Length: 264
Ligand code: PLP
Image 1: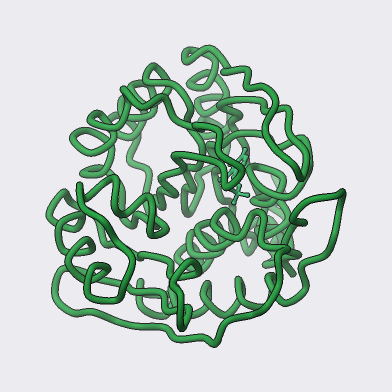
Image 2: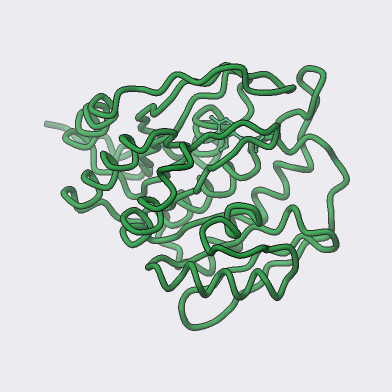
């Protein structure tokens, strides 16, 4: 059988995440980011959200067993070079993903610990947070919380650069490398990587825009894609930081509220 050389070069990234009907965040953002970086997105949907730029009006969780069915269907056929996990929504879905990670030698696993939409709705059942900390975090390579998510995971308030460092250490003690994204910091927008040995800071001046919907999804997905490209975690984080800043600069209006970023 002739194997197409293009197939061998394309990086396959498995995305386990939710759908955003407004097309700005979630799996829609992930597919755009991966495609623009020359990769191929394999997808397993965890939830379907009804939302627009003003808010989330409904969430339909996919039955946990069917999340596994999607993942198994794709990984039995193609070996992904990285995995991005986004919105999981239910405790049952978290349990199912933990089982999958334990039983299939997946590598370069990036977890965006999606807890709540900027517009206010919970995107993870609050009762699933302990499971997240105790069972899921130890199995992933890198976790990418924003300030609010880092605070919840570490059990402390995080709103300045010192808090970020303390929270990063507390979360890293649960297992993974940690990148706390600093887009919500009041002054500079510094992303902080802690790999268990050293802190690495990626600075950027504030980009004045309200069109940042999907920025966390794009950052974590770009990070997974750069890891799939054989970059170490420091280089992959720097590249994902630059890629996301460019996506934010190119953000645009889509509806009456904050619009999406534009990856690629
Ligand atoms: N909807 C889905 C499906 C998401 O995965 C996410 C974030 O990951 C959001 C909404 C939240 O987007 P925002 O950054 O605007 O809060």
